[in-house]
Every structure is written in structure tokens, then in C-alpha cells.
Image (cartoon, rainbow, N blue to C red; front, side, top):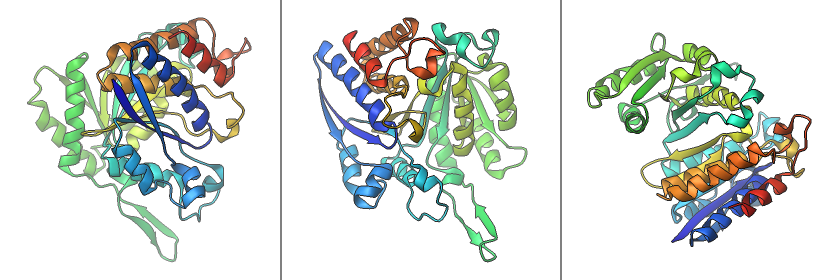
Length: 351
């Protein structure tokens, strides 16, 4: 099978972790007699530096002509520290999601048996955790009207949702719940926000079409507490853009490191696969970043291309590396640590 995969390394540690994912994917492709045509393209600060635009038209064309997109990270401190910057790397990410129609971010949170005691939470609270967030990606406050008034002394950001936007995200949530434990939680702030009341109303209407799914409705602040108290109470959670952005980062620490959690951003056709961590500029070029989230994101890519055995091969070797202590410094805790590239080499050799 021939696969065309757009490769967007991005900024900071993005190129380093992407390189390791490519090593592993190439090894998997060789094992299963596939051919991967990698199609590199610019995005983020690297694209701004090269062409003045964080998501150039050329990159978009590369993405839409591919079977999937493997993505590293976006962001650079010189933009973070400049509130007046008119063009920002993160604008490229929002534009990419919108132009590719990536309306659903799929973020699993699970524990690794060999790392469970490295989590900041107690073993008895997190053991067996296996939940998935579906975060709406192309609506809400990140895409609403915004501006300044009163000579710049008043700022506003508008959270807007349509019923259709909620329905398409919730549909994926219900379908995923049917494949798992048939349990779905709608996360909102319906006691305060009108947009959240539309979310709850819409999901309640759709629930009639999925009588086997047990649906709960919880306020976002309650979920924020319960995620660290009883994460095992949850299975599939659906929510709007900003709530999902915050809650999924909170959930990621359950595993013990943000460097372990993969994600997928999907729509009706192409999917984009990326680690949930940021560009971590402090580590860029030092060969110390954890590549496992990116490599596990590649496993999600294979899954969505109906290559389940290939995906499982990746997950198995990642579990083996963790069990044998072939890890980067964020997981070593005083023991032997390996460079980013060494972890990639070890994994690729064991495919």
C-alpha cells in the first residue's frame, strides 16, 4: 500500500520529535510492505520566517493532496512575548483546522502500567484510566468576533456556536461511545452561558437516536475537579473549543507526562495527527524532548487508515520502551536517560 503523508514539523522540538516518528513509521512500512511518500511542508514560525505566513497556500495544497497529516508543534517565544505581533504561529494552526475542516479533536488519556507511579495523582485514583475527549475545534470563542473598544481599554471575545456545529461533533461522540463502553458526558456551562444551553439542548435531542448510550451532563468546573479525583468515572467526553483546550491539558498529566499523549484532529475526510505538547522552545535542538506522543500519534494515523496491526505494533514497542526504561530525561527520574534520537532508533530497530 502506498501512503502519501504530509509532514509538518513546525517549530521548537517539532522537527526533532517528527524525525523519530518518521523513523518508526518507515520501519513499520517496511515490515508490512507499505511505501510512505513523505511530503514536507512549512507551518508556524518557520513558515512566517520563510514566506511571512504561518499556513501558506503551498502547505494547504500539500495537505489536501495527502492521505493524512503528521504534525509536530507550533510556537516561538519571540511571538509569545510580543503582544503587538500581527502575524502569529498559532494563527496558522487555527487556519489549518478551519481550511481542512478539522472540527473534532480526539484526545485519549490513558495510563501506562510501568509509569503509573510517576503520575502526580495517586495510583488508586488513576489505575485503569482510559478516557477520550472530543473537543470541537473550529467554532467557539477562538473563532468568534473579537476586538477592542474605548481606546483599547475594553476587549471582547465572542463565543458563538450553531446547532449544526454541535451536532457534527456530538455525532462523532455518540459513535465513539457506541464502540467503547456506551457512556458519554457532555461538558458545558449551561447554568451561565447561552451557547452552552444550546449544546445541552442539542445533545439531549440527539440522545434519543442512541438509546444504548448513557448520557450525563456536567458543568465544566465540576469536570475539572472530578478529572483528578475520579477519572475512571469518564469514558467519552464531548465539549466546546476552549473548555476542551483546558480540560485535555489537565487530563494529560494523569499519565505522568504531556510527552506521552497523542491526538488526532479529524473532519469528514483528511485527519491531522499531533502530540498534545507544545513546541517547548527551551529544549529545541538539545535532543532531549520526549518523542513518544508524536510516535503514538502516528499509531492513531495508522488506525484511521484502517491499518490496525501497524498501529498496534507501534503501541507495543512504545510500551516496551517504557517498561525497559528507554526514555528521555522527563521520565528517567535520576536514572539513565536517552536522547530523543536514541529513543527513536531503539523503537525503529524493534519494529
